Image 1 (cartoon, helix red, strand yellow):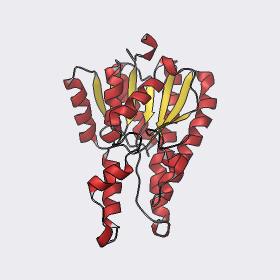
Image 2 (image 1 turned 90 degrees about the vertical axis):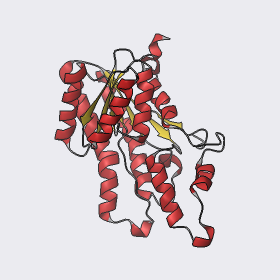
Image 3 (image 1 turned 180 degrees about the vertical axis):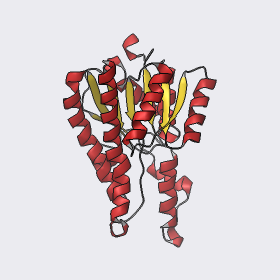
Amino acid sequence: MEQFRLQDQVVLITGGGSGLGRGIGQAVAELGAAVVAADVRTDQAEEAAATLRAQGFRAAAVEMDVTRPESIAAGLQTAVEAFGHVDVLVNNAGITRMQGIGDITPRDWEQVFSINVEGMFLCCQQFFSCLRREGRTGRIVNIASNAAKVTFPGQAHYNASKAAVVNMTQSLAKELAPFGINVNAVCPGAVDTEMLRYCMVKTIEESPADARPTLDDLRASWGPPQLGRLIQPVEVGRVVAFLASDAAGIIRGQSISVDAGSTPY
């Protein structure tokens, strides 16, 4: 079972300071990895790293703005200085907006794609350069969404951005395989995070007053029917941890639904 372990591996997680990023950090740390929580919100990154260290795991925080190549490069360098190398990149940083088609401005569209797509690509590019300089192989796990496959109303820009992540994952997998870098993605469903709660609050606010749901109503209706509850971040993290391990070497360029059966493919 050693091929499932992440002992001596260093995993950098963008958006690692909160929500799904923290769940991924917990999951990979439990399998032996050192965790680098990379986030534009340094206070949250520090808190995430401190929580892991309190459990006896190795963890560090770095500041990283995924829209700025120089910030990504600096964050990777800080991680290398802390642990000697970085083996796995998890592209988790992302945003959404709850907006109808008629309300999305060019600036809204640009902001979503800047982080969800361009930011992911820039991180992969910088990580690739880092591995080449060090003469190392590695793995990339991109966080897409089941929105890439089934779409959700009021999030056309988010849906499209996650579809781009799925497509780019395939491109990167083919192009980076000769360099010993395996690339995959996961497509989570309704995960209990701040982002999902934001979507719930916006849905409540925009519902007719005489038919306004409660948060409990939405938790029940948005949770995967086969599961009967919302998905917890660490549950997605365990699938990410598998894809980051040697055991997943035969899985390449895939975008795996991690949504408790809500997506049929």
